[in-house]
Each structure stands twice: as structure tokens, then as C-alpha cells.
Length: 435
Image 1 (spheres, rainbow, N blue to C red):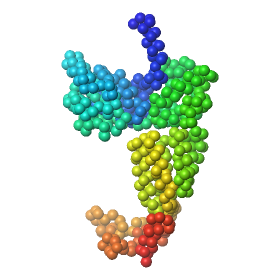
Image 2: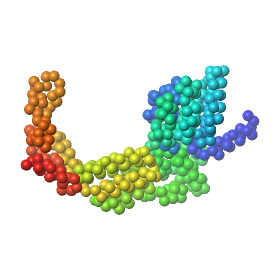
Image 3: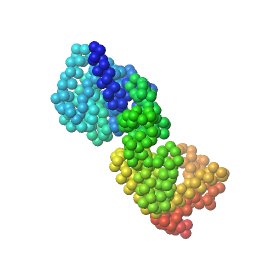
């Protein structure tokens, strides 16, 4: 290599996007994914011992799928042959498999075939890989943003491990951003660009688990900062992100104020206010899982048995949000929030468990009545366990009067149903039993 080619190579690296320059080169630089790639994890142990299985790495954009594949390539003695499912056809696959056979035969070297966006391969392309993955002639590492259980052939799935990468947490993104700011060799360290924690947090929140987006925003902000004071300010971020920045901080007062207003609006049966505060949280980049959890809690605490379907819808919405992701998840959350806001309300279950817990903590609540105790094992009857228990289904209307509470609290009433929604029916049913 001569001086000019060396200079050109250095210049080329400096002109690469920050996200490309900061790509981790080993596990110690790989932030997040501790379950998958942390010290002592199963996959990391296999890689460090150069005994890599075929796998499909599944995760949202920016979670480190390609990066993890590159780290594996750098830490093994195998040939690394990348393919892109968008641009590669059957001929490209067969050529790599042929080369892999040659390397194995003449040089005793294994070949890792890395296929980015493997979900874009059709069935016939995936089927070509099957025998070679099964007999170990090639090690397959596929990367996909789609659920492989839906997008990859079952026959191929049965021959690989699924490595699921989660969205990066805010602390992981903050660590990545700080490393990029301080890294003199590959990052912005030589330029002495500074950025306060609050502004870094805005970037991390906006990126929503995507390290590539976070680093791209930081790089754009650094361009503005160079032309000004060398400091990345909130004003600069507002110029880059536009109306995406709201007066809202997920770790400070505004976060709790808006979340509180959202819950109270649903509890107060105001669907318009619920949608307003939901929109403010979404635009500010709030974690959709946090929002979904608040809706589930509200369904149980503020609606309860007045409309038992509310909890079903809230829980279904949480699962759908996880499956679909943003931006469409906003529609699912809106539907659930409006249902909760317009459903009949009751906090009877919430008050009931609070009373019961309070009694258990402060009172002598006595022992479980003998006839209610577990009587399935030999010798239980001799202790009186289960003796004289009345099985409700043996009686008319599947009910028989029987004391279930311990003697010391037999007169307590924890669940007091309201007259709202389904609880009106429950109230009449319980009253009928009393008669």
C-alpha cells in the first residue's frame, strides 16, 4: 500500500456515516442485548469458542443484527460470505455454496453465509440452503426484521437457532451516543463537540431503540454545532427533528403529568382528552409498552367487572402493539383508550383487594377452615382436611351456603359491587344468594 492509497482509505473512512464508523468490532463494544451477547451468554460462549451454529437473527431496525453477524465473522476462523436477499438470486446462492465446498475440501475452512433480509428469499431460494445447512457444509446466519416463524420455511427454521434482539433501552442508546462523542479514532472526539445529558436523552427517546437513528441524529446535530458554538443544543435538535420535540421529558415531571392526565381522562370517561394525552405521549416518543401497561391497569382498576371485556381489549391491544409496532400501533392504542374511556366504571375490585390486603397485614385473620384444606393426599382425612366440604355443583343452581372466610373475619365484605354495567347483574346475583 502506497502513501496515496493509505490517504484515500483514511479519507474514505472519515467520510463514512457516523453509524458505520462506530459499528462495534467486538462484544465489549456491543451495547445492549445482554441476554444474547453479554458475558457468559450462550451465543457469546459459542462464538468465543469458534463453535457457531446456524442461526437467524431477528430484531427491529438498529438493534444490531448486522453488527452481531460482523462480530461473529471477526472472531471466528471461518470464511464470511455476505449476501443480500434483495439483490441475490439462486445463482448467487449456488456460487457461494460451491466456493464453500472448495474451501472445506482444500483448506479445511468453514464458510459462514450471511443473508441480510432473509425473509425476502422465496421458498425455492430458502430450500436450496436446506441440505447444506443440515450437513454443516455452510453455517447460515440470516438477519430479518420480520417474525421468522411467519416468514421463514419451517424446514429451515428447524435447522437453525432463533436469536431475538430486543429494542435497545434508553440507557444503552445514551452509552452509544456518549461513546460516539468521545471516541477520537472513529467518532466526534477530535472535534470536541459537546452535548448535555438532557439533549442526549431527547435523541435517545426519539430513536426509540434504534442505534442507527440515534447516531444519524447526533451526526446531523454535530454539523450544526460545528458552525456555531460546538455545543449541541435543544434548538439545534428542534431544527433537525421539527415538531417531534415536545415539552415532555420521560424521566421528569412532564412525563408523569401527562401520563397521569391520560389515566385520569380515561377514568373520567372523556375519550377526547384521553386521545389528546395519548397523542402527546406518542409524538414525544414515549415507549408504547408503557402506554399499553397504563391502559391495562386502568381497565382493571377503574372498570373492573362493570365491563370485564375492557381488560380483554386492553391486554389484546398490548399484544397487538408489540406485534405491529409503530406507527400503526398508535391506532391500536387509540381504540383501546377510547374503549376504556367510554366503558362503565367501577373500582370495586380495586377497593376489595386493598381492604383484603390491609386486613391480612394488620389483623389476626385465622386459619383456613378444615373442610377447605387440601385433601388429595393420604392421611389428610385423619386430620379433618376436606371433611364435610360441600361441593356446590351437587346442589340446585350450583350453590350451597357454606362459610369460606376464616372464622376471625367471617363478616368482612371486601368486594362490594356497584350498580354500573355488568356489576349491576353481579350485585343482584349475590343478593339472591343471600336470600
